[in-house]
Amino acid sequence: MNGSLITGFTAIVDETFVHAAFDCLVVVLTNFHKRQKNITWVEATPDLTYKDLVNTHDIDRIVYISPTLSLTETNSWNIGDLLTCLESIKNFPETKFAYIGSNRVLQDRADSQKVACESMENLCGFF
Image 1 (spheres, rainbow, N blue to C red):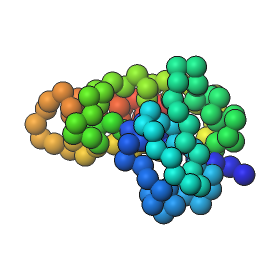
Image 2 (cartoon, rainbow, N blue to C red):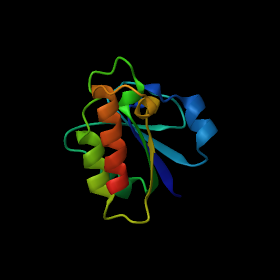
Image 3 (cartoon, rainbow, N blue to C red):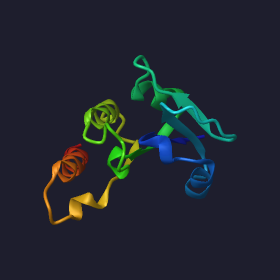
Image 4 (tube, rainbow, N blue to C red):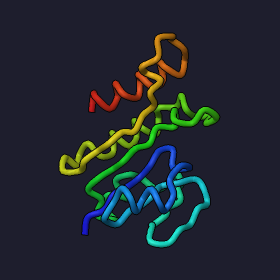
């Protein structure tokens, strides 16, 4: 059985979303203490790698939710986790990757949030 990994800004993930969007095992990598039935919630730790998750849970799809979707998220400019995720899975060419980003890249005015959004999208395009 193949599964999906949801990572990034997982504070917005709930059971309704998971059951509407996926028909397989779903693993959510989170720093939040949510627990809902029929979803495997894995607490993010410094020792846990994306490679471990892909191998352990037979992941064939990764959905990365950008922290820039939150207006209050303090780490929305940090692209380090996205880079780590993409670097980790580049040796798994069969793994599909989807990035859910912010529409701030479409704004006319340039600010740090727009630059962060564009940087994240460009990083995904690079990989």
